Length: 84
Image (cartoon, rainbow, N blue to C red):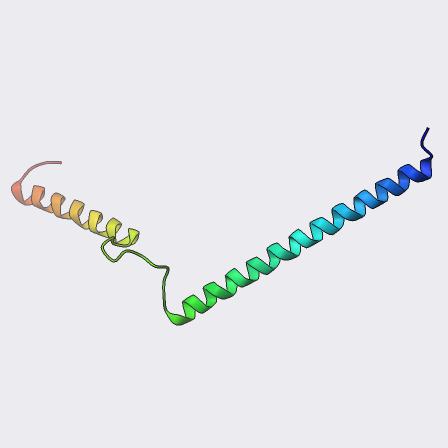
């Protein structure tokens, strides 16, 4: 039979190691988050947006173009006297 003090010591050591590991992982994640935020701030300050292929229009532009095409189609139908 194992003495109670030995079980308690093992549990305390296990808890201490787990807490230390969690602290190290949390601090590393926090450091990475802060570095990423700083990088994004510098990117915005420099006026650069994330690299994008110039041949591909921005999603907002495509939506606006599609909306304009739909309006034009409706106006042409009205001008031709067609009911939609």
